[in-house]
Amino acid sequence: MTTQQKLDLVNQVGEEVVTQKELRELFESNKPLIAYDGFEPSGKIHIAQGLIRAINVNKMTAAGFTFKMLVADWFALINNKMGGDMEKIQTVGKYFIEVWKASGMNLDNVEFIWTSDFINKNSNKYWQTVIKIGKKNNLPRILRTVEIMGRGEKDNITAAQIMYPLMQATDIFMLKADVAQLGMDQRKVNMLAREVAEDLGFKKPVSVSHHMLLGLLPPSEVKKDESSADRSIRLKMSKSKPDSAIFMTDSMEDVERKIKKAWAPERVVKENPILEYCKYLVFAKEDSMLIERPQKFGGNVKYKSYNDLQKAYASGELFPLDLKLALIKYLNKYLEPVRTYFNENPEAKALKEKVEGFEITR
View 1 (cartoon, rainbow, N blue to C red):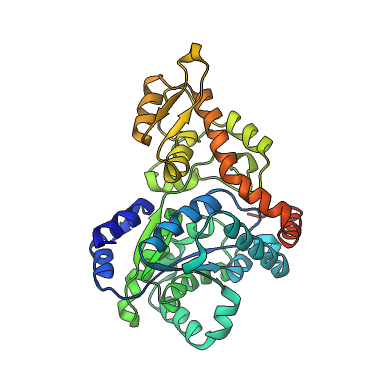
View 2 (cartoon, helix red, strand yellow):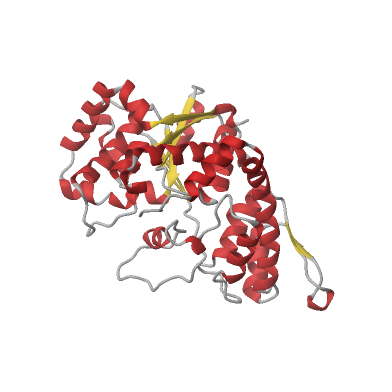
């Protein structure tokens, strides 16, 4: 694969890449490369964390990266996920790994790392690095990063949560990550790591931030002085609002119900979650998308690109219900291997049942 082909793959993943020049230099170095992402075990896993994560990891590993997936149990504890119960958090973490195994992720160049194990093995250097990053920044600077925890600067942040961004930046350095490949909601901590890296003797990580998939519910009003990036983060799917997301083990009936009631006004392209699902899921996996319709409504039509589909929707040529019905079929096709895995694997099934019995906390 040429350098340009590798760049093209990574740019399919990244809504933003900081910087393109540094990414090219990484590929031209011909050295082994590491990318990472981290997930708080925090309940059921939705398709952005499952299917889209699998799609993006597969592109990164195809471009030559070893991908380190951090199962961030300590971070979930700090952020009071699962009520701060570490046994529950680690149960959910094991469930996450089983979902990724079943979701089509190519695991040949993927390593799962538990934060608790990693810190315990590297505690001296790890905590020294956390302290050094903390000394380089004042409290207001750290508070500007708290959206990485799903929090706002005006929320009641605990003293433990102040540690969270410092630890996440430390993970980047300790994992020797060339690329931090996380969602746009994690961008601010990647920039924090880039700011302090060279002063602390570490290489500056390239930040490849993927798009945050919109929730299925109607969008709320624009907030004053809200940037488009901040708005997309605020409107992303939420585990605390189950009908805003498709979960990886949702039944066929769940998928149909949620998609049919999803917000998707006729001819409206902006902030349309159904179109987003088509763009970031269907066209990431398929060469075309087939819309099946009765002959009286125009008959079947196949779109060979997302742009063609979007234009048809904007013009009114493609009706919302027809698109939703097609999307339901594609989503159920993608989720069926996951359902089968959790039905036929006794250990995975037991994990799923445990997790579904846990109360989801913000």
